[in-house]
Image (cartoon, rainbow, N blue to C red; front, side, top):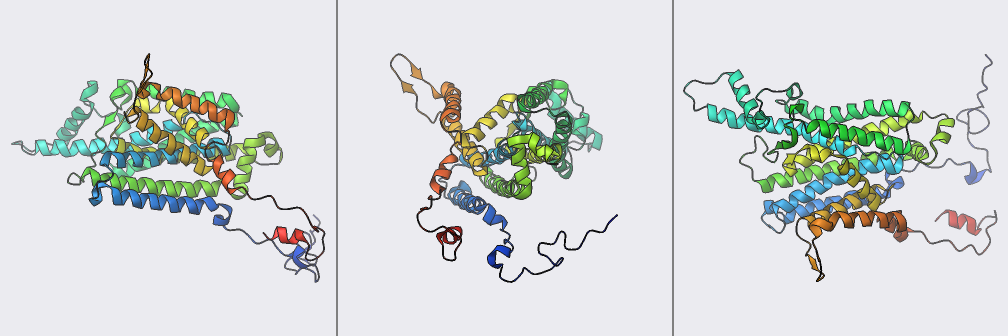
Length: 440
């Protein structure tokens, strides 16, 4: 094989390490690398806004004594942050990669079930141990386990622990399940779907079918997760019985804010640079990216799996604040709501997904919680509890038709740079306005 000359592959003649020829000037200088923050200025602004918001809620909460914000409202805000996190994951997989997944709320629910198993087991164990401690004869370890099983599964007519509860007594292992189960499910499902090159609406139908199958399975009493009763009492954290709910709500609120901040940075990194360009290229023209030599399926599988894991983490933080999880939380309609949030906020913008999830979820709580006053038209009274979904659907249609960039698109209008005045000398000579414009 003929050796390749050293000058080939070097930027300048003379081999690697050679300096640019004299007199070439700025044209031969290497372009300085931009920092991560310079490429993503929204990251710094978002983290700053999130920090100020977190600090403000903490100061105004009942835990600090101000009691301007109730504990229930702090929990609502904490849950909203978790929904913002899963919305960012949805935006990356849909808005950036072009995969309309109607199953990411299934991963969200799996994370909630995983942490819920430990919460129910540990809490029930404390109750059972305390009640049996007064017995004349100390109970055996098996008797304690049987009593816990009866307490948890008596509602579905059973007392034995299913195999799915094998690690429920270990917090560490259940936290691993929060990551491993959604990640493994997404990895297997994505590998089967992407290797078959299923795309578009067919892939959306497959993800929806996966979600529907999972929710229908969990509705069965023999699923091992208490059927339609779900897991309840998750707001009672074992080992913190003496801690008030106000303090616990702030702790989970901070944890949710931290997870949202880290998730935002992670996804900003994924959607930046070469990887981000390839991912967006897959969204815009998958065939062309494949012809350029990129392994499209690997990129799609990576994005799908990572976003599923983040969705599971968001669910693990959400349901201890909600206090209960049941199979209805995993139904396909929940994933459809998630897509609506992202569309209203603005696809392809991480901050747009946050805005959409926060805006719609808080508005939903206000309308369905009785906060919005009914409107009496004389011949008919509009009850917003019943009409909220209609309003949400109309909003989605309106955004799709008239504002495809969503609420986040307003920032594009605000930050739009002024078009430069193209009058004057734009020739190659030194001092020409072309150089001035390029330095702006």
